[in-house]
Image (tube, rainbow, N blue to C red; front, side, top):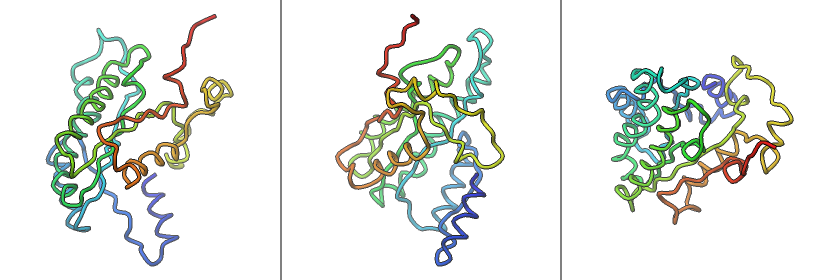
Length: 219
């Protein structure tokens, strides 16, 4: 998907073909993160925004009694430790630019399906890390999070992915009448990164079509 985006931007921005740089890194590995940040800052010379968005679900980990420590550590490592490492190594640059950090949490920080312990724990940790960082890094750096619910990301995944088609009930169960879209989350990230949110820090904004406010009982 990143390769497709890079091709699209290069085809439409002849005057600024280098506006997108793509790197491969393991966010759970500190040397990998440090190298990526060094390469980016060496090219661009500044950093205004960090969006911690890496995450794995795998898809979930099964019963707690069969969840291996290796699988637990991998989910926590990518989804939570990775956010810490990226924030750590980007902080000096963000402080100079008086920039912002936006962390990608999840509505699963507040509610769960069965057998999602590692994923839920990682997302709950992101909410706590967000408010901790906001206090430690303020006022130079604002730190907030977005907690998406069910988001249809097929348009952003690239041509190689073919998730099942959404059903009417998938949309209808949401109080807003539809499943979320990628641009719903992108708009929130842009808001939290910009000057319009200058009085907001340490917060997690839930974008889930109202599902965490909906009481669900079997009738």
